[in-house]
Figure 1 (cartoon, rainbow, N blue to C red):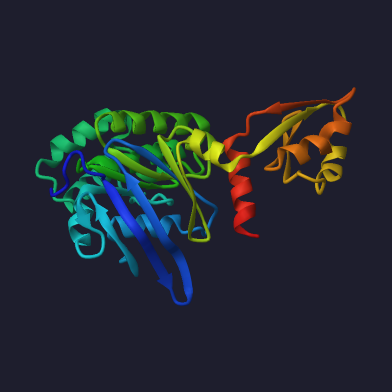
Figure 2: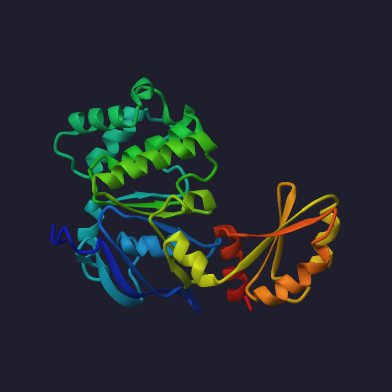
Length: 307
């Protein structure tokens, strides 16, 4: 492989894809290092899947330059594919084939030399032993997800491109999935993972957030939260629901969200926000400043993108 161990696994600039008159991915830059878990966030239709498909050679960019695993994303797409494990949003294996048969089929597709050894190794690693002869279609959502990840890993790729891999999976299965991804990262395997879940985003080393094809923010969770400069206050007390409409539209108030038995009120103008909330900081209500979380920051980014 042409990629140097110290070189970025993904290093692209200005990557663009146009369908008809619509620019789905608009000049996005990304640089991801070896063994990094890179979260890719954004609303439905933001261009995440299109971007991922360009990286793994399934779509040719209309503009932009760069490399994936050391290969040119425009001119060497066929050389990228054998070294990437791609997992789509929808379970795409054969439901009328067993776990072992599915893995054998994928191993054949990738030209794995010793398929039996590769299958046995993968089944053991992913704890699929008791399901090896079970039809894939009869597995639960969590075990289907685990099988799909196993199929991604059967040819020992250096890069995983996982497109919303945990959608519709229960919390325990999601946690197990992420534990496995972190183990793989520890072995030097890089992962670019699109997700809608904020708790999953916080498990990534770094993040990129896109909307309407545009890159809005990149960095660690702490860097993205700090860069947005969002001030957030928590209001606790009785009859909070009655406050929501009254708070919205006040100077400095950009979003009001119910969090359990409290309200989170956020805005970038902290002085105006503080002044607007001052009348509510009395019994039976309690108002206090709290750190902004990732969800509040991304809502703020989305609102800026639509104005």
